[in-house]
Length: 462
Ligand code: MG
Image (cartoon, rainbow, N blue to C red; front, side, top):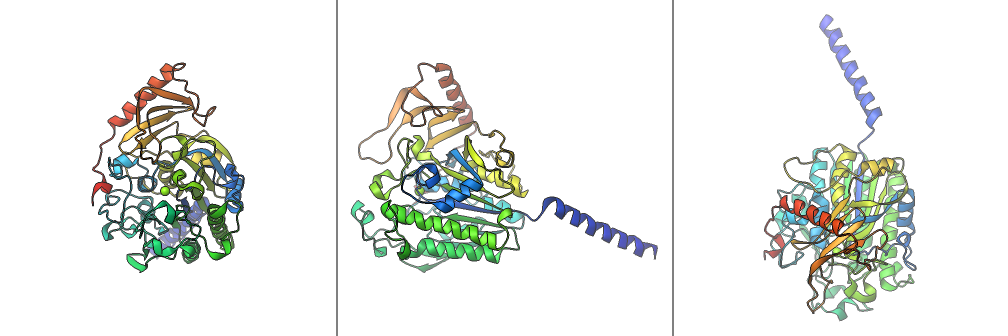
């Protein structure tokens, strides 16, 4: 009898303590990362574009935080994606080679499976994990998202201009786009379900799948990674968005992406989980300037995709979670490298402790608008550091423009130095005025390089 009473007491205490815990912590927060392809710093309404309309993304920024010094870890696709998912510079994870910069359909490599992704740490926490969109971290079976912590995959596994019947500027920049010119596959989990993918409806279908995923997992905590195939050229929009924008085909495609963001916000609101869902909106790299009017714009920032000038790596960065993220415009530095530690901090997930991470936990900025813990950033191109930023100064050691036939690489005899907050366009060299800052940044680079063990480049395998 005495034991029975004791047992009952223990059960009651356990139930009470569970309830108490739940009250304190609430249900685990959901995480959605919307990752654009080749969207430039100035291609969103609230980032200053004069003719692109993005009311939904603008609302996301207005209700949340809009970051103005947010960096992607690479100026091209594959390394940028690997760094976001692992919180590590591409050079540490086998995604920085001296030859190819991204994966192609004939590549046999991928993000090494021993790397630990955001999806993997959240899965350990009992999250349902999905990716809808462009993977571009290896398309062979052993490198697919389902091998990297994702329960579900739907999307085009690499860039939408690959598998070209004839890759040329004319076919890319045509006013009458044709899906048959790009023999890209559409995959669901490990299967190819359509080829060539109907790219006209790709944004619409990604959106529908995303809404289904959110609805299906409304009771579980979930992580949805949504790397859009757009606005990478060739540009495709579905019929109702064609010829609707003042900004031409690029604006039409952005209108559809913005609609997609609105659909996701509506779905979260209807399910009453919007307050419990962190949405991050950002881009993999700057605008592909070679694509003329079909490419985006970095606005006042110099150059674009492929370079270590600001236009190649500074991208829109928006965080939204009503009641948790304190609204405001944040001028401090942040990076896609910071997403893994930030998400771990938000969800209680465990970060790997057996390897170097390059990210910082941004939660104090998101929730209390404290100063950002990130005060520096390294601008890698392939295996080399071309530039580095420390607080408001950026030093360039090597410069090179994006994609031209002429050789534009310049190994600078003495570094350039820009006060990047006063001169975000990188026009006025101050290296002779502040030689101490140049050497301080040089020392920082040297210290960082001592921690790097270069892994063989996965994209050089084919
Ligand atoms: Mg890209």
